[in-house]
Image (cartoon, rainbow, N blue to C red; front, side):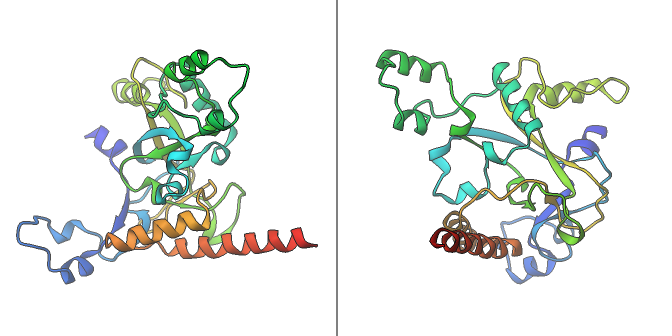
Length: 268
């Protein structure tokens, strides 16, 4: 019961009761409408009161070559090296050194392929790929479960009002999560970065302030996608009949304005 309270997702996103009823689901779909939110939640919101330092949601993550997700809808849901805070970058580095991170497509990285060192023998190059050596600038971290990837990102700068962040991401190993579950309250919890023998990466969304029921979850990290990548995500959500987060259109508009400003600046 304690693990359930601590580790089960505290956010909600998706159709509400009224929308679900209007869809007239097939008879073989078994779902009690009362388990749904009363209204639609196109962007993740708090399903319960969340205290400071509470784990809002956890998701396993896949580390893949950057070129695999660039120019796809997934890019807007992923995290790249330049998105992370220094503490998160250090945690990723520590996890890599401890052998917890393995890139899933060893033919990476794109940058190494393009800027292949002429002095690096082909055999040595292939050996580096086999040993899974990589630079973090060449990979992306993709959350694999839940709604973590759809949480609104409001940037690294602290802001006031409706767009201030109320959560952060912590990067830990699978074994780090397992160790915390075994330790209990009275024992010291493992720091970000983790340890142990378990392989794999876990992203933890942690509250930095109290969040009330129904309040939007907002992460203190920048958007990852370009306008084209966000547009691909938009069309993917529309095609699969999912709700469109209202902030997605706003982010696309802001990105377009920034690009326009940059182009005007370049012409001066």
